[in-house]
Length: 428
Ligand code: CMC
Image (cartoon, rainbow, N blue to C red; front, side, top):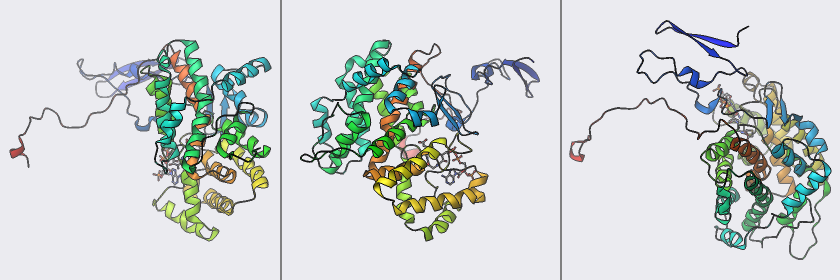
């Protein structure tokens, strides 16, 4: 069976044979399809990139129809059950699970980089008291590039890894500072004898005079949430990371852009939107009415639906179990009942069934964050902390890709042409 695609252009009657590799054809192979020899040639049109592979990757595998998610070939269920977030971070960046000495060295090297320059702290203090934490995070990550000008040496492998370690270590510090700022509390410096998640909770919640030891169940739940959010192949923010990285910009600038993409309510901002929605619904009796409004197209059911998962988001299943364990410690929120009822009705309703809309990772994560004591504005920041690892793994892969070129899509231009300038007094 030849591994080719035969295309007949009915405008000209010409036939073209195009190679197929990995069930894919190269868009540039279509360019030869022309009516006149001077034509530009055929392109594909794919708004939102719903059927366009932008790269070849070995980081994360998703089978959306079967609800499968794997990092470097390991199923997410096993990683969430058996690993720590730092192990998973190593796996995503280096491609293999670490041996014990490798893990020790990795953990130690991240500990070395948790502090930020004091000027960063002062700069953050200049944000308004009610600045959204995600806005603070995005701009401060971008500002970090000015503290590490050598980060521009993006073709040096050792330098790239140094910046990656800095970012993975410092983003939790910045994230905690955004929260402390919004509370009007002094920023807590990192405590490097704690593990990644404990240290983060310490920077968030430690008050000056009280000892602070986070509940182990909450530490583990957060670690699992971090593992589940660490990467998700070519999603909107990872694509932005790669797009900015493709111009050889430094990783701080690229990561700030990726975080900005994550901020939107259709992406990482959905967890914040879910909580707003649950609060708005407020009571079980209001659920059917809300579902009707969604079906009329008045709004979307936040935390539902996914571009890739058309069966079930495997992360949502793990998070739901995780939520039960967290609520055993923190007590159950009434909003959980609203969420469960919303899920129950939606999963039975023809509108959602037909469109294959299921709860996604963000449907229950917000309830856990809320139980841990976080305000909703911090939810997208909680997503950005672990996703930093995924963005960097995607960026690292891009930077050694032999086929890397600056990202520059084409357009189908449908506007006016060849118009002559009209002076003001002659315009209608
Ligand atoms: N509620 C109601 N209807 C929906 C929803 C929803 N949440 N999501 C999709 N639909 C409908 C949509 O109106 C359309 O219906 P129709 O065919 O009648 O026009 C159909 O389902 C297909 O939707 P789409 O917009 O073409 O799907 P998409 O793949 O472009 O969008 C999505 C995916 C995640 C942006 C979308 O499902 C959505 O807006 N969900 C709510 C926001 C959300 O929870 N986002 C988090 C995604 S997971 C975490 C992450 O990636 O950050």
